[in-house]
Image (cartoon, rainbow, N blue to C red; front, top):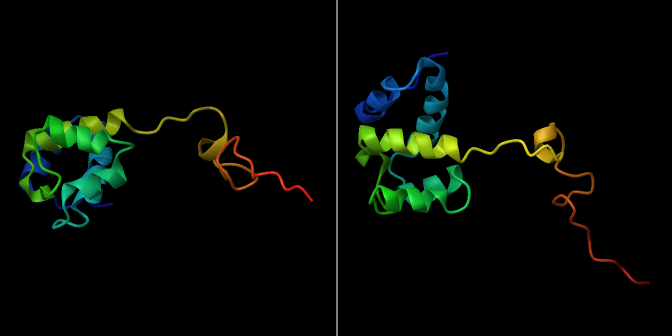
Amino acid sequence: MSRPLLPSPAAEARGALPDAEAPAFDRLATAVLARPTAPLGPVLRALLPGTAGIRWLRQEQLAPATRPAALTAAQWGSLYRCWTSTAATPSGRGGASSGGRPSPHGHAPAARAAPRWH
């Protein structure tokens, strides 16, 4: 499998990581750069849970309309650390982490349809 072609700031940030973390960085960079003209706000909303993307943008003092090409190597590294720290971890309560459907009845765990009174 070939490495994705990264802009030089992203490639610099990737080079600073241990070799074992390079594939994960490549996944993040590929997702962020899939639409290079798209603003970072919506891109990060799709990649990071909850408000983590907005918090990261504020921490880096970037506007949500900032384009991925404007990121520095330090910001790429910071984004990678944020992404890895917020990655979903298996909960051990079944659901998607068990490899199957989230629940047998098609709703969120413990959610049930409203009772029907006939």
